[in-house]
Image (tube, rainbow, N blue to C red; front, side, top):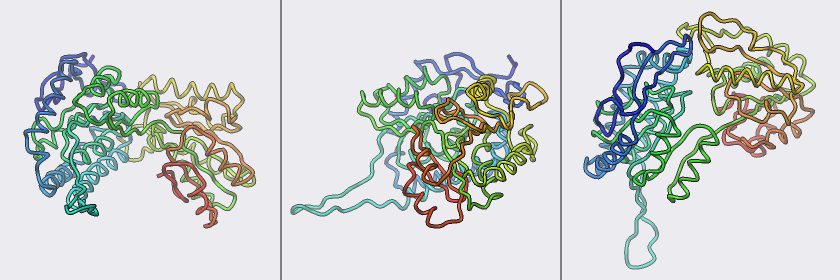
Length: 443
């Protein structure tokens, strides 16, 4: 392993080495080590949560007036923007996204803190209708210690989406970043500290989810968990939450779908489909990995889609021209390519085969894959792949496509491409999905 110095982590406001196992962040484009640290021990987890609870009760953060907390969150947003390029480059190294994407994610993180600063200042409490000779009010109060368990695919943006609202409400937050990508959470904690968030209000505890995440979730002082990640882990957290009678926020797996009708603007639809599945190398819970195309335009559409898919620039994330980077780990690459092999064995036609793409070095690269004649009972159609693989199905009508989209266990997002305003409007209500895009990629 590299001789890079071990990085301290934030345990209850103290920056020190964890007492657990050593781990490393690898640059997915080369396999090189870019950061080393020791995970917290279970005793460190206990200490961090107890100190978070103490800071919540004694630091004055929860008692600050909303506009005072808002000023601190505005300062966090400002510091993120001032350090945007170093943060974007660090995220490129931490998880291998192209630099154009990591810059956008850093900007998103700053915008998230700015939004919740504004929300903090403008949320109004309510005098509720009286049922007697007294006045009643509905007021907002923080919960205490909140756990934020974040994924590896968009670290700084995901951490901001959990940290900002929890801090705005006056809570203390224990962040458990993904084991593979701890670096941005640590930087964000430093920024929060510099901006004026009191010591102990934010802790960062990297490590294995099955060990560190589990210990955090089960701790009696943790009053709420916000988790983004795999469905099986989400179910496990939900069971723990049920035993504790604790609220949770879960953003889990996906197999989002896009439908292209015969009246669609083909070039626009092709670009939308490509962005929906191949941005972030398909490593996204809302990746548009199922595609339903009207049979009448299928030939023309596929010709354009294939040409543009094979022309995508896949390579060095540091190159400004790169459109798709590597996958997060060697294991992820092997898993994704096994899905392509499995689909072929189940009768799908591999129109573009990402396994055949050639790349220099030891990075975890795979190319884009387009699969035709996909069966709706096959693994590649039913299961989340989390990689640049598109399963394509021909449909005879809007109704057939809608039924196939809805008849699936996942429903994070969906999109439709059509020039018919009535059909688009109907789709908004007919489809069973959390987010709906009309002539745009899945939001």
